[in-house]
Length: 343
Ligand SMILES: O=C(O)c1ccc[n+]([C@@H]2O[C@H](COP(=O)([O-])O)[C@@H](O)[C@H]2O)c1
Ligand SMILES: Cc1cc2nc[nH]c2cc1C
Image (cartoon, rainbow, N blue to C red):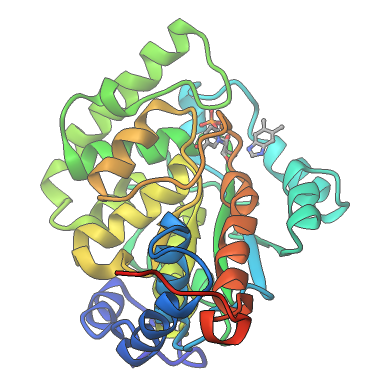
């Protein structure tokens, strides 16, 4: 079983942990299913909100869904592949943006304030870039497991929701390489403009993604090998946090392309690993839409954002809160003295 005081030390330990993940709480879901038809509305009239309250209760392990303690954690990591000229911005932006998060000046600070969510920032060895994965594996087994274990420490019991956010110049190249490594197709299917690169840089980035998968092919036996070879520490940390959330009964709202690439690694190990996750937002990065389809999910909102930081998912938190509030706060037909349907 997962013990937060003794985090896993190797990818094999995490593989073993993932074979024992807790299932949804069927009793909690049965209670929600029994209460729903008694609420003062025609059956099914709250559409997807009804699915959300059922999902929240099941993964929180409670007959009454809650949304008073959502947490967004921005994991910041630094990427050796930036040496290939794949981003519109220099790598020093990472540390500068971390200071901006701490000073309350980033978009995610304002969104979290607006939606009443806690915001935390966790640097994942930010001062040491991962290896340039166009030349060698980004991480070794131990380093990748360490980053995942660090991500696990972002979760504690009693949170009502976790949003994995990230900051990492170059990480849409890593996300593209992960998606291409997991799902194949063409490298161009998965490679987009990230922070806003020009046509020439996009061609270079696509080649980096394509060549990296050829370079590492012989050592990518499962999805964790893909994460280790072409991922990044903040991506590994998000994957670790998603696993820990499952064990700690915390539902997860995924954000953009990079957070979904982290989640896709887990889904490729065991397809049911993401049952406690919804996708909050579909990013303007074209590969994200494709990736969400591969995960069999549907994003809650489409706001044309491509920021990362957990921003799109954080913006969708009020949809989850309203779903929980309706389920809990609505009167029943009996209590309100409203006549029920004739049929
Ligand atoms: O998550 C997304 O969908 C997303 C799309 C475009 C950009 N980003 C953010 O931009 C940075 C990565 O972009 P790039 O061009 O440096 O690979 C990183 O800090 C991400 O948080 C994130
Ligand atoms: C300024 C800036 C802010 C970001 N937030 C997430 N990724 C980012 C990338 C840049 C370049």
